[in-house]
Image (cartoon, rainbow, N blue to C red; front, side, top):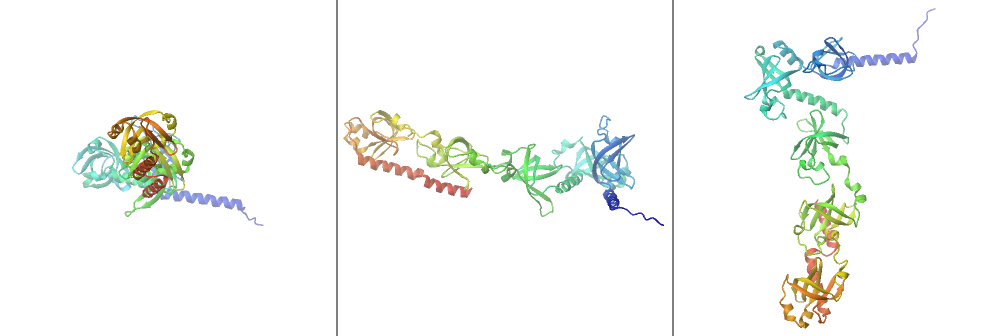
Length: 488
C-alpha cells in the first residue's frame, strides 16, 4: 500500500509565503544597478571588508578603507547606517563603494560607465569653469556644471567634493566632470522618496534655506525644497520675507499642493500660517468688548487706522474715535504706521471679522469727571478755540469746550475786552451751567445774564461743524468700516 504525503493547509500557506519572500528578495536585488545609491546597516567588519545589510537577500560588501576618516579611524561600526554606491551586482554579492578610487584612464572610464561619483579637488578657476584633480588626472568642470549655491568662484579653489565623470577622451587627456549632475541625481532620488509619503494637507517641519522677493524656500529633504509664498508666511501683513523668517529658522508648514510646471518640474507649495491655525478661532476669548489692549498700527486710510491686535487680527479706529481734544480730519494727524498704541475695544463681530476700536476711549472720557472739575459757579481759565456769530468757544481742557454766548458778551460790562479776543488767547470766566450728558458748558463773565436761545443755536452749529469733519456716530463709522474691510 502506497502512502501518500498530504500537506496540511498551514504547510501550504507557509510554503507559499516563503516562495513569495524569496521572489521579493530576488526581485529587489535584481532591481539594483551600478551607479545606484543605496543605504544599509553595517553587520560586520572583517579584515578589509565591510558587510552591509540592505534589507534584501544578498548583502552588500564594501572595502574597509571606505569607512576610514582622515585619521585612519573607522567612522562606522556594526549597527550604524551607511550610504554607498552600487559598483557591481552578481547573484552572490553586491559590491559597494562610498566613491570611486584608484587612478589611470581605466578607473576614469569605469567611473564614467558605472555613473559612480569620484572624489575631486578644485585646483584653479579657468576660462569657462574650473580645473579639477580626479583619480590622478586633471579634468575640466564647466561653470554651469558646478554647484550653483557654492558662492564665489574663487572660494571653491582648494575644496574637495564629489563629481560625476561625463566625458573621457584622448586617452584621458580630455576629461570633463560635473558636480551639478551628481547633485541633481541625488536630489531626484530624495524627491522620489519624499513623494512616496508626502501628500497635500500634511503638516511637516523643516528649515528655511533661502529668501526671495516673493517668499521663502524650506528644505523638505536633502536638496529638495518647497516654497512658502509671501502671503502664506504669516497671518500678519508681510511686505518682505525677512519680516517673518530668516535662513536657518525651523518652521512648521502645511502642504498646500504638489504639482508640475510646464517643464515637468515638481513644485511643492507650503503655508506657514495655515499650520499655525486661524487666529480668529480664539479671538473672541482673547478680545472682548470694553477691554483696553495694545496694538500696532499697520496702515492708515482716509477714514481711520487699522491696528493689529493679534497676529492676523486687525481692528479699525475711525477718525471720530481718535481724539477728545481736537477734531481729526486725517489719521496722519494723530497716528503713524508702525506705532504701538493702546485702544479700547468697542465691538467684536466674529462673523464679519470686524473689530471697532477707540483711541480716545482708551485714554478716558474727559467728561466723566467734568462736573467735579468745572463746578457751576467756579472760575476757570481756558483758551479761545474759535469765534462765531453765536459767541466764543473756549477750550477748558483736552476734549472739553465751553461756550461764552454772544448775547452774554454784549451785556457784559467789559464787552469791548471780550470782543478783542482772538484764537489761542487766554481768558478767565465763570461756569454758568454744565450738562455732562449733552457735553455742554456755558460760560459767562461775572454778573452777566444768560442768553439761552442764542446759546442753543451756537451749540448746534458747533456740533454740526464737528460732524462734517469727523463723522457723526456709529452709523458713519460702520459704513466706513464696511468699505474698508471690503477693500482688504
